[in-house]
Image (cartoon, rainbow, N blue to C red; front, side, top):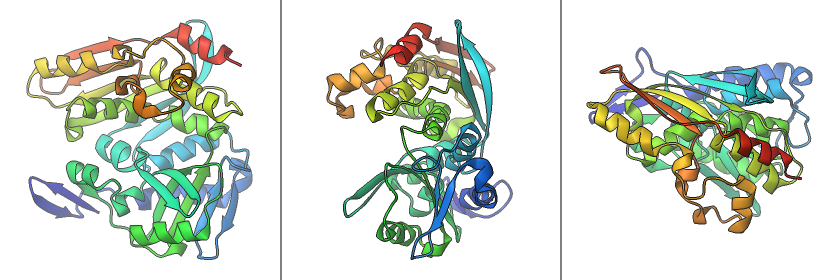
Length: 333
């Protein structure tokens, strides 16, 4: 694993994370007890291991927590709780990391589109840090993992062909038999859990969009409701986005030179600043024929963001949970 700081390359040493090796420890838990986690395991002709956590497999809340940890490169913690949102009680996920740029950007971000023949899937997870996908992001945060194993999470509605696995392994610089692909679908319970588990990633993504250097973010924590799955892909995606947009709460400890910067970022960060705010996400998606490029990017943010400046202790919070929109999201057929 390599870190680049101030133009210098630092290899190994204390505090260095190999997110693929760490994630493999959790993958092995799934492999050793597939009945407990409700997953199905198979090996492709190339030797790549597939772990179905939400296509044909039933998965579950516990599986969703494990998949979320894998997506974060095992460099954060997640737990399940139950919360009251203004009289609406929902299972919820709490996410924390002391390595935000690595856990959230180098791993959890769905930054790699896998395409091979007629197959395509959105990929997240630590193997992105082997292939450095996308390269511009990895150069900016100054991190690259070097491991002999790779773990990737695919959001998909079909199993990948062996040719896709071989291509992924090649781009990661590893042998196909050392590649582990975890599969989940948007319409599954595991899909719902792991998308809500992206609440702090969503917050960091918004702050990065506003110009805050992700390497200045030292700690991140947040929670979001876990919405019941829906058999229709579009409605399921709408529900899960509503969990973040209208129910996601985040807090970040940052290192900034001035509190004026702190206030500037936090005032622009919550989803309520978007011109598209105020309708269930499914209605918004449908109005643009699911062309996400036509949606105001400010909508893809948590409901509430708190920033604390480590240099001064000053804390600002903007945004709040919108219980009415959460209810409307769930009441849609």
